[in-house]
Image (cartoon, rainbow, N blue to C red):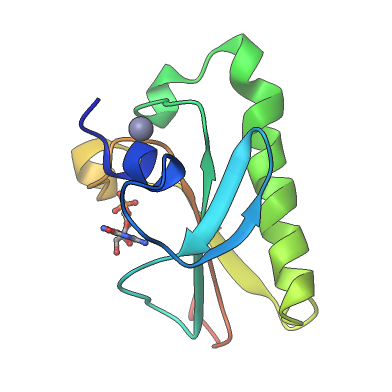
Length: 110
Ligand code: 5GP
Ligand code: ZN
């Protein structure tokens, strides 16, 4: 499958990995929009949020849990951080394998 994040999961493309287990991987965004910008990605290829099934719900919840664990690990949890899923064209999605952006280390405006 010609999917950038599947290639990172399969170690065909390098990335700076901060977390990995059987279901989830988290790595630095190559073009960070904040001092910390992690992408938390399920190993299962799911193209968009619209493709999440009932059986995927625990997996998507786990992405949120891993994002919060990473925030604690880099000591920004108390200051706060932003998490974002982009979906399809109007959402600005460019990689069609779902991923949770975790951005922190700066103050975002609302
Ligand atoms: P999207 O807009 O689809 O929500 O976000 C895709 C993200 O993937 C972007 O923030 C972009 O910087 C990041 N990205 C694109 N290509 C690569 C890559 O080869 N490696 C890594 N680590 N991130 C990438
Ligand atoms: Zn994929």
